[in-house]
Image 1: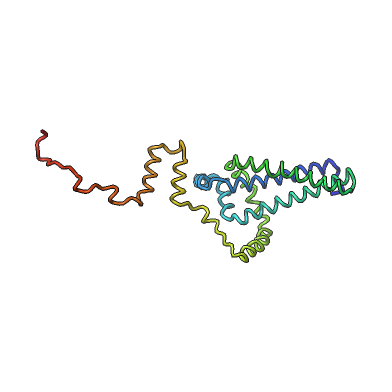
Image 2: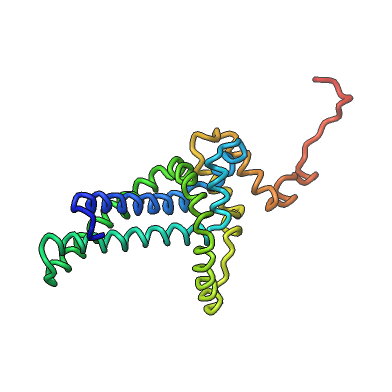
Length: 226
């Protein structure tokens, strides 16, 4: 690292911040993407959607590889800023502290907050794009991810915390009604009303939909029109 020129060190710092930003975007976009929209795209043959679906199928491993790479990038960036600061201004304690503050600011603005805000606003597009890079990265780092997850799952087991990511994709009837009600222009009001009534059909009793025969007025069809 010390053999690098100052210019190369600054370029490397920028690369590390970009790498960290990529994993921040990946985390937010994949975690906030509409799963039902994603399944629809995957069924229609979208390659990015298929890769994203496979990644989300193993959410624990996905988060492990994202956080592993993200934290490594941030740690490397912090070390590099400290080296640059020491080279320029010496090894005084105030210089090292200033370098730490500068690193924190750079990571927060350029690698954490800004990328995550962008990812939250454009989750579908970015999640599909990020999946093309995350999928091979996960394959390459899979042994390390498994090693890390051994400790994670061990801690969860100690505290008796059970995880089941597949259950998170299921919705209740009330949630389905909310989805239909909030569908806006995608479902016409007439069809929306029919769907909502259809969902409530199982709660309707016979007395609510049928009229007692004592309240029915009838006529003989053999009588004349008059």
